[in-house]
Amino acid sequence: MTLSAKAVYDILMGSPEIGNMMNRDMIFMIDVPEDDQQVLNAPIIRINEINDYQDGFASNKPFSVSFSVQIDVWAATIEHLSAFRDTLDKLMSENGWGQYAGAMDKDPDIDLYRLARRYRAVQVIHFN
Image 1 (spheres, one colour):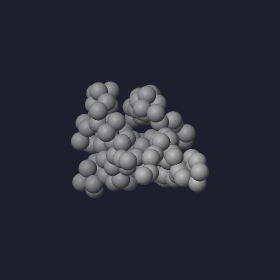
Image 2 (cartoon, helix red, strand yellow):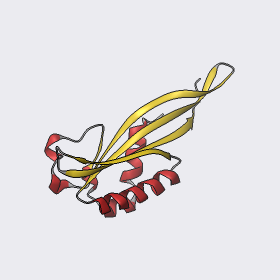
Image 3 (cartoon, helix red, strand yellow):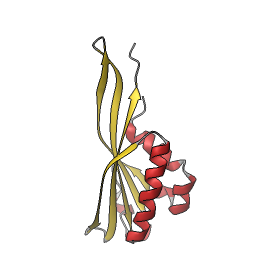
Image 4 (cartoon, one colour):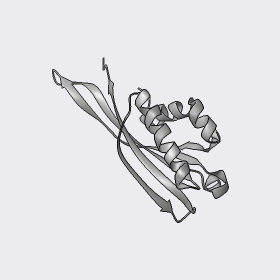
C-alpha cells in the first residue's frame, strides 16, 4: 500500500493541468525546504498526510483504510489560488479523493497567499 502523501504527489506530478500552472520542482511532500520558500518560486505546493485508519471490518478483520491529506498551495494572488482550487478539486475527484475542508489565508513568513484543501479517500486492503 502506497503512502497517501506519495499517492497524491504522483497524481499531481502526472497532471498536465498542474504542470501548465507551475514548475513541478515546487511540489513537495511533508515540508518545503527553506531555500525554496521564496516568493519568486511561487506557486509552491506541499502535501501532508493528516491521518489514516482502518475503518471497514468483517469477521474482526479490516478490509478498508481511510486516508486524509492536506494540499497547501502558496501563490502571489488570490486569483491564482482560485484556479488551483478548481483544478485540484477536479483532479482529486477524478482520482477517487473527496474534498471535505478548506481554508485560505496570507502567510506572513513568505508574503504569499495560502490555500489549504483537505481530501479523503478509502482504499480496500487485503491482509494475508
